[in-house]
Amino acid sequence: MFQSSFVEFFSRVHWSIPLVIFLPVIGALLYAGGSHYRLPWDILLTLFLAGLFIWTFTEYSLHRFIFHYEPRSEWGKKFHWTFHGVHHDYPSDPLRLVMVPAVSLPLATAFYFMFVLIMGGPNAAPFTGGFLTGYLFYDITHYAVHHFPVKGRVFGFLREWHMRHHFQDPDRGYGVSSPLWDHIFRTTLERKKAAR
Image (tube, rainbow, N blue to C red; front, side, top):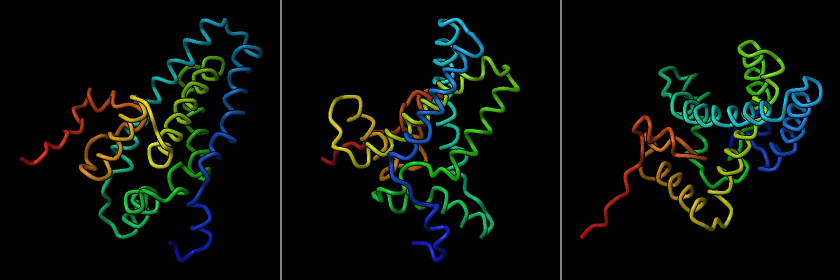
């Protein structure tokens, strides 16, 4: 797809790689919160759930304002296409559905240090653990709605929701793992009415 084999290599990733990278990180963050910082379990759980919740807003915001930003310069257009446009042009490519580590690792690190600045290291550890758990749920949900034989109400709904974002209205339906913020910010997808 890309002329540069370097760019091609770093633009593709198997869906399991984020799990391999981030599950140990999440475990270490929770261990640090509980054992190193000795946070009580109720505080640990509250911070973890808060991080998970903040992820949902981050997911929506990144997808709406960064992934769907329309740059004006030629360089910006090429960079944006490489970052997210390729997914909309090739939505069924199984190796271009989860975020590549070359992007996810620096972002995760930046978010962690931002959380440390905001709430201190002890609180940032379980909060970031929840945040990264939300990210993993997003990444795996995104892959699943494209490639797994999704069954059940929840995943069936999420698949339909995301497919409508791709094929009906790419300017709405930014939540992949949850439509919560689409409802709050009125970017929900309308169901197409059948022609009579």
